[in-house]
Amino acid sequence: DAAIDAQEAAELAADQAALYDGPWLDTAAGISTDVSLTYTAGQPSTVSAGDYVRTRSEGFAYQVAASGATNHHVTTAGGVKLSVLPNNGKISLAQFNASILGYANVAPQIQALFNLAASIGVTATIPAGLYGIGSTVIVPAGLKVVWAEGAKVRPIGAVSPMFLNGAVGGTFAGRSANGNINWSGGVLDANAV
Image 1 (cartoon, rainbow, N blue to C red):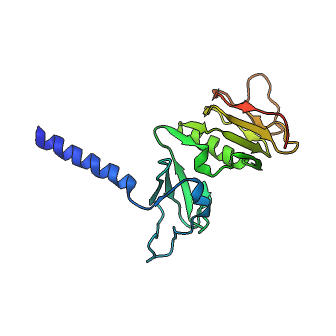
Image 2: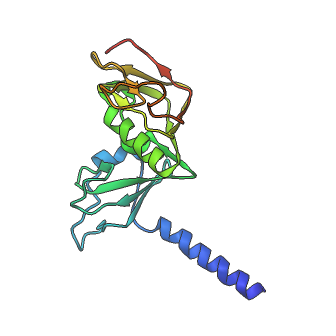
C-alpha cells in the first residue's frame, strides 16, 4: 500500500536525519583544537551525553560521552569527550587524532582503534602516513585491519615488539595467542626514531 510505504519512508528519513543532528566540525584533526563544543548549558554549541558530532571533510561520526566518562576515545581542547562511531562497517585511525608524522607515539590511539574494531566487529583502517610506535600494541583476537597504500609504522626508541598478538611478557605454548586476525597492507619499518 502506498500510504504504508510513504509512512515507512518518512520514518526512515527521520531516523537518518537524527544521525545528522547536532554540531559539525570541519575535520577530525580539528577535534584536538576545538573549543566551540561545550557541556555548559545555554551556549551556542552546547552538547550533552548521547548527542552526535560529525565531521564535514571525512564524514566521521562521534557520540558525546558524559563529562565524567573515562571510556571515551578523544577529547576536544574544550574538554568535551567523544566516542568514535563506525561508518559503513569501518573505523579509521584518523578518528583518534593520530599524528601521521612518525615522531609522536600513536600506540595508544592504535590500541584504542584495534580494541574498538575487534569488540564491535568492524574493520579498522589506517590511512597513509608515518606512525610512531612507542609501546607494544596488543593485537586482539578477531581483528580485521586494512592499512592504506603508504601507511608505515616505525618504533620510537627501543620498543620491541611493536605488535603482539597476546599479553606483553606472556608465554604462548602451541597456538594460545590471540588468533583469527586479518591484517592487510602496511609497512613495518624497524628503523627507530
